Length: 428
Ligand code: ATP
Ligand code: MG
Ligand code: MG
Image 1 (cartoon, helix red, strand yellow):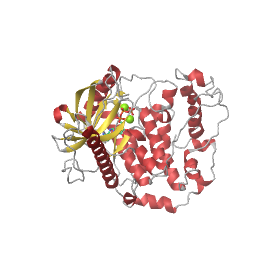
Image 2: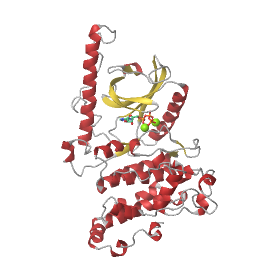
Image 3: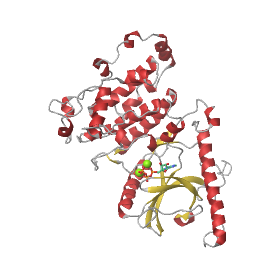
Image 4: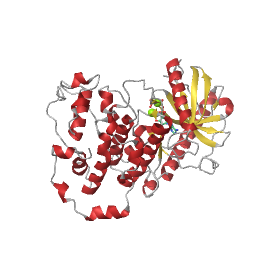
């Protein structure tokens, strides 16, 4: 992909925007860009530099992302909305073409990495609560104030907040920035390889060291030392607005990453901010259990979409007929009664039994968490609570007194309900 129209090759020490930003080491990459840790010499702080591929379609996408990120930054002057901040943007000419570059605030690891480092084990519910509050605050801001749908909410697109104070001198915060390329390394020749190699090693160390500091300071359980840090505020921000859209101008038909995709998107019934609430609920479940809630696979005689719809109904109950048959794709999957055409026998389960039986939640924890999640999984999009409403839910705001009360009280009536279809309707 490092060819005309593709990525821009970067070396540590490379300068951008007339020398203001200096590349330190690679942070990550995606289908559209490579992202580098860079040093902002004007403000003496680290930033993330997203360098887009140069071909027209990527430039177009970057312009769209910049437009949305600018609107997002404009309304977030006090930086308390838990959404990544766009600091600057510019064009950079290279051998592969003109690259649009976005300068973003430097954030920490993604929640996906956090889940992996946790070895897909459950995360403490108090931490899940803190993360959920950040995500919902971000979504509430996007939906109500900016008028934007994220449309690709998932653990990979939620980054932990770096706790290195960017206003502090980076030297004191643990890492001296690389400010220039050493003599000789630009021009090739025999000394180049040695210097280049040294510089590469140094860049790798710098990124590793900064990431590790970030991790341990954020209370993230990435290192052994960090595991002892308990009760630290876990905070995060929403990133990757490459697929986001204005709420009144939805353009793509197929949105969202498969596992986080809402039923109305599969059925092509039109969509709204409610799709982000569905993905949010999938993400919250994944954080709390370490597993994806819906991981559909195509099978003999049915497609991935159909498996996905079946998995949803097995957990949430039958889809209301009106909803099932109301989409442009409905005829492919449902008969006129609203039953799946090719997957006939569903194995009903329920969210709170799943949490107890498979993930060993206590009865109380399972019931309370399911009461928070189930309304978000309503098949009728408009019935899902909004981000603003979800922020008010008791699960996010537990008071010590009610907690001890429910813990003392044995939860007799729920114990033997089992997997009856009635119980699946909980929360509706
Ligand atoms: P995608 O294919 O996911 O759309 P993309 O090319 O749009 O990719 P991003 O997802 O924005 O790129 O970024 C790629 C990676 O760079 C992220 O997964 C993350 O690891 C890293 N990254 C992005 N933004 C930041 C940031 N602000 N701070 C730190 N790391 C970042
Ligand atoms: Mg991404
Ligand atoms: Mg993207």
